[in-house]
Amino acid sequence: MGQLKFMSQYYDMIGISSKGERDAIDSVSKQEGIEIIPVEMTRKITPIQDLKAVYKLYKVFRKEKPDIVHSHTPKAGTLSMLAAKLAGVPHRLHTIAGLPLLEATGPKRILLDIVEKLTYSCATMIYPNSFGLKDIIIDNNYTKIKKLKVLANGSSNGIDTSHFDPVTYTKEDNVKLRKELNIDASDIVFIFVGRFVADKGINELIAAFKKINRGYINTKLLLVGTYEKELDPLLPETEIEIDTNINIISVGWQHDVRPYFAISNALTFPSYREGFPNVVMQAGSMGLPSIVTDINGCNEIVSEGLNGTIIPVKSSDALYNAMKKLIIDQDYSNNLALNARMVICENYERQHVWDAILEEYRQL
Image (cartoon, one colour):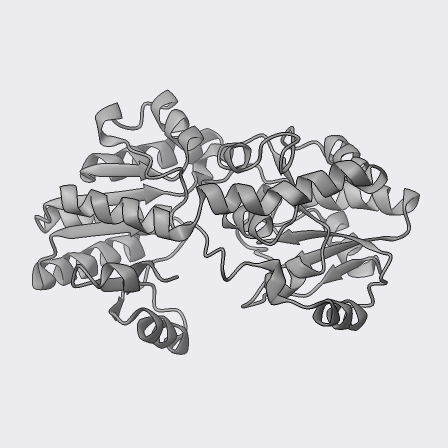
């Protein structure tokens, strides 16, 4: 949000996106003040549809003759970098905001590795949005080091800290929402925001909370997001627990997550892989300490004992212990919360990220 509008002060910007809902595209077009051209791109491995998308993108690039094509997300990156190279676009930039292939194995991993290398070979510059992600790319020999650069301190867009600010919500606002969700004033609320998929550590989160809830009855788990059952389903027992545990509150997809951060005490984010997670920055900007896994992005935003705690990946026991410590050691929890917003404001304010991207465009 806001990046394309900002860049429009210096360049003629055109957005390209999958079709999605027409109202959503129109809303973004109006909000950012740019033209958006819909080109259908799937998130799965669909060779025929992918070739059609490459051809459509090629036609757009030949017609518009852009100086720069800058892509985000794995599928859009592969298709647009290939199409941009075929169309002779001089500057082909791709931002890496995570590598889904890291959890793949066998023939699928081999195929995804080949596609990743193809994307990077077609691009003129690659921008991992975290330093840890850059190291992973180098370790896997996906591209030459000279093509890689992390802008600012990481992140693809930074955070609008004036928007994600706890003072936006009054005590009365928070009491009202808690009441609507059947959360008592004395309840400690752990929040997760994101897709309900295995890769986000939801199976481990539910297992850990189930154990926490047995020992500490004044705890709630607030889930903000939706399932993606076709792409990355949860264990059946996890879904059953979410549906039947009265202390797990699932509010579905929300266009504005701030009210839910405002009534929570800590973020639980046990993801297996990330680029540079917006959710962790959003929670920090709202003054919440975070429990995150020891993966790139997460372990760059969170410093152990400063604004949160870092646990091993795929460990429900470690997550349980981290949640338990936040419950029983209030001084520790309060100190993390005091530092949380400061860390985000000093390092990841979005204007700083935009300025770094603009300077990169200017140098090109």
